[in-house]
View 1 (cartoon, rainbow, N blue to C red):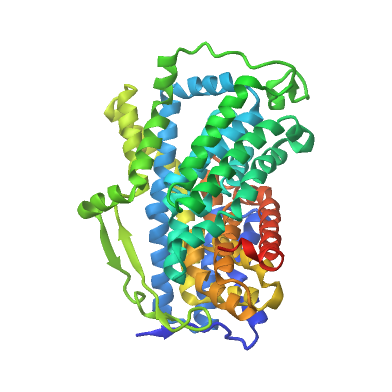
View 2: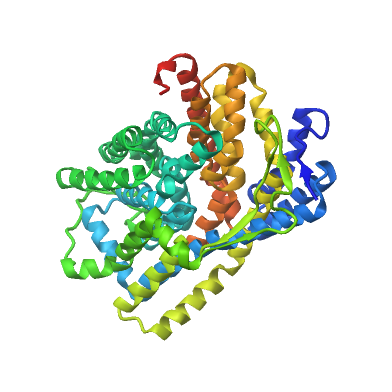
Length: 548
């Protein structure tokens, strides 16, 4: 049985879009306003999406159920698999006591919490994003910040805000590669165009990160560090994306950013060291002191950092296409989803001509990033002298700690897949596309919406890439500009998508506080997305020569 999506079931694109948005409104409203626990809010949103898809859009119930099941499976693997094993690695460092040494080595560079946030949430997070993506950097950065002594809410929020500018080139350029595949536009040109948009925000985000943490005055005191980490990343991001391609943009930029900040700290330190109020003798969060030089020996420091070194190397290797190809030959299975695979047809104007949607669940259990994290935990645990039986016990404890959160991720991804296969997301996209000459402004916001719905810049590009291209041609702007704007705007939605919120809550031990985290980051996300819209509008009408 086949079914063709309907994008205007109620005769008015505006009314249809409002109805299509109900599942997301229910999910976010229950989280942010009514403080309902995340797994209950996710299940309520899922129920609403199934009801709208079946009753309003006419989607066959068997297809809707299959879409939800496919999304839930994807939520558990690979997303849940990544989260579970990232927390496992972190638990090993806590179990062995090595994280205390990690904290001291970072404090040796800078005792100032603002500098630590830049190093971990922005620079190191960008490296993990470039190598793995798909929630990994948020899980790891947030867990590390918690271990360093950051408050749970702050650690989650900073990890989410920091994980923005690198997202478009995450997982070795996967979002850009997917965008080129669905639009047919040249990969090199798309990489270059995104690389002429995001570097502006790579400079802004470190300042924004610290401003959200300590306010404007506190941010001014560390502006050289913000500039060094952001500008160095932005320059490399521009050069590599324009003259090499999308593959190693984040990895190269992150390495240069970390080195730039470390070199700066050799010659400069903030005049006052910012710490949390409970770390100081009073209510003032500043101390007039310079960082105490770490007395940790080099060998001891290397051993303490071993799990994170192993993790970084493993994640990088697992991200290489050549390695993935080899692994997939031995441990990858493609399972077509019954009642869904090529049974749902997207049609105009979302795609140029009717196209059957694939529904394939890939069980790449060896090449999955989560497997690299799992092996990193086992390998580094054994190197640190943890008995294998103790590692198994610790792993079981980690599973128990995140089990409800894994259910939440599964339910949220089920909601996202239902809206995608039901055509609800396309209706919302068409509402954005109907804005005429203002479309260049709303084009990045469409990408932002796509990531907020799907949890992935890659998925958003697959979802709306063709729509961006078709609408741009109708409006009279460059299709390349609009397609790139989808990815650039999408990165700002990464901090508010349900998947990332849950990942951050798991990593910081805040299950049940997802609504609080969402409120912490929502306005930051929207404000940055609006700025991307203003930039793209300027590039469309004032500086069209910037388009390759």
